[in-house]
Amino acid sequence: QVQLVESGGGLVQAGGSLSLSCAAAGGISSYALGWFRQAPGKEREFVAAIAWSGRNTDYADSMKGRLSISRVNAKRSVYLQMNSLKPEDTAVYYCAGKGRSSWYPSPNRDEYDYWGQGTQVTVSS
Image (cartoon, rainbow, N blue to C red; front, top):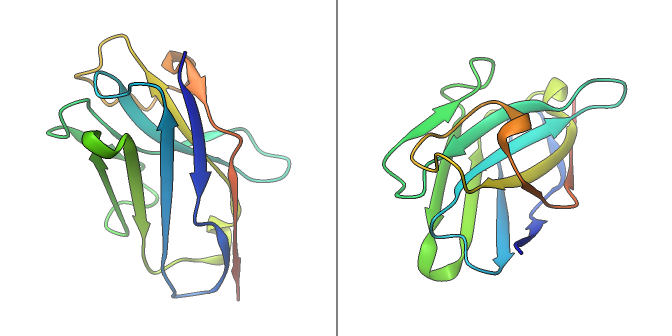
């Protein structure tokens, strides 16, 4: 069983940056890890993902160029650096893990088995 705990959310002005962290209780070195977000009244959507090795990554087109995902397996952690934030980036951000096809950083939320509780990111205009 894997438990994921996000941290690092908060309130930031438009154009600012935030760094989110996700720490795992339980081994995640063989899991692909992803970040998703959900705004009020909207479906949960893909943000970024990274393969178990860290070699393969994927980003949502809407945020490409403003994100960087990384992981440190020894620390059982994954990180999301977000820059040039916009008010429309306001959402709850979730960390997720999948054990199947962990070489592939899938953007499909249905492929992820484990989810954190989320951390709120609010971007003011």
